[in-house]
Length: 185
Length: 131
Image (cartoon, rainbow over the protein chains, first blue to last red):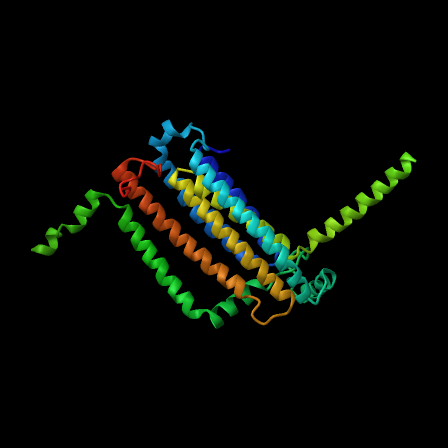
């Protein structure tokens, strides 16, 4: 159990990298790269910075037990048990349906993918082949989802401006309201 | 007699190992879904039990990642069945990552503003709206 928030962040980084490896296993290499770049390189660094900024005064409560509130633990246990039960139930029902719908076996899929891989260009060292996943994702992204893509860019702009507005100090806010003497003349 | 059983067990273990190796080379949909569900449950447990607001945010990231894993798993499953919109899952994952990044930036901005006003990051001490 990691009581220290920095340890939690480091463990989360390792699990994000593992999920990126699962993406590679599922032949989503572009998404795996985005996961590493955005999550591990961006979001988690932001988290670590904020932990360093904010966690200074949290030391005196950092040593207390994690599961010390009985009601909270009971509620979360009940909720998680419900989720586990729902998961087992839905796997039980859904897996048969998926298997029935699927006409291919894992062996034929592997053979198909081997044939598909042979069509890819070999890399410079010749030890591996270059995937076309990025090209395919880009094509689909701009063909089917160009409007959501633009909306996402607006969302990111709003998030940038909003976080800057939220994070500035009172002194900076007061300074922003001041009229520049050079302009007032 | 004993060695006979041993051989049986060894063969059993070898065939099991071959099956496991084949399964690891061709992961099917259900394994991804189980891992995604487990990640989701771990994230929910983190949100419900932890009181450090930053750790709660990190648990939310874990939940979003579980959803991403499910999207990718179904995208792979659809591409196996040669569906024409098989890459929709990957595109959706891109958008989920974008929204998660925006959410993290805004949330951490709120955390910093909160810390400046209340000097705490423990959610049980932030009870201004509690009646």
